[in-house]
Length: 375
Ligand code: NAD
Ligand code: ZN
Image 1 (tube, rainbow, N blue to C red):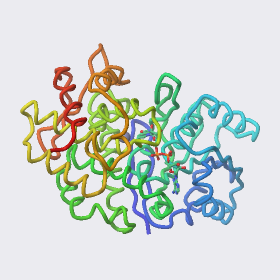
Image 2: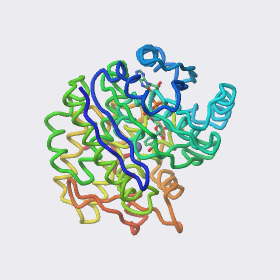
Image 3: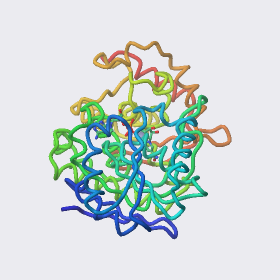
Image 4: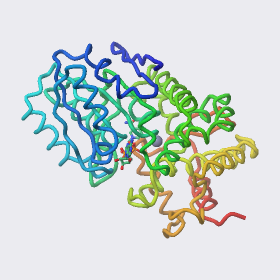
């Protein structure tokens, strides 16, 4: 059983299917949208170990011939070298312009494969089969794709919408729990932006998503995808409200940069701390009730996510950082324009908005507050 959402962006529309054991039906679902029964699966070595055979069997059963490229796991795979290697292999496989490639994996594979698809012979179609909670609720939807350069993350890329997203919640069973919890931070984000009912639902059901309750996982993923699809339909290229999806991200990216994008702090964990900072900043600016900031902190803590840089349970607290250095990272935010950084602030739970006028001293003070030990 699966449920379906349709994403519509200008002249392109595509379905997202969400359900349990969809990998077993992947062949049947994919076959009708291929121009010939042939494709290429691109995945990483961890996903290959746990999930690849399910997809391969399903494609074979549906009469689809395929080749498989298995890339190294990890953020470093989003590189020019890997991009070049993937393009070269696709050319070697004589993939045609009307063919579609299949990205099976988390955000790293989705971003790299989407970008490769967007430039291979000036653009071919691709299918997202996201296998991390983060990619199921965020990166597989909306068409942003790209790679990192030594100068920073996601600095080279394009917008290229997939033709189909197929989300099998059972793939989360093999995902390390730390990764599931980190992805959960992005789920909470949608509630905090503009859906207080969803946040309230998460307060009672959040832990079920981590422990593998299929109904809770499906509901959370569908609600998140619907929210993202809605924002993307109105603002595909992030000229306005799509930036609300960056709640907690300007702070979070500063922390990730300071940790060298290493495993010490993974993206969703940085976003959890960043969302608490966005609420604290809004309280400091007199925009948001203190009680709402406290509610967010407590919820994330209950779900075992870090909520401050000085969290003694997290390895992050051992890395020397200063508020000034962290602040400097925010100035290099990719989303800065005219030297100003747009912050996502809030008037309370589910009431986020964009603000380009935040005083540098307030930002530094919030970093300092997060660096200071809890009272
Ligand atoms: P990831 O793809 O690196 O996956 C995390 C880890 O889990 C990897 O080691 C991977 O091999 C492993 N893994 C994945 N699925 C698994 C499974 N089912 N079982 C076992 N192991 C599995 O990381 P991610 O968190 O999915 O994505 C992060 C990337 O997404 C970043 O590069 C970020 O920039 C990008 N991103 C893109 C967008 C967008 O809109 N395009 C949005 C958010 C994040
Ligand atoms: Zn994110």
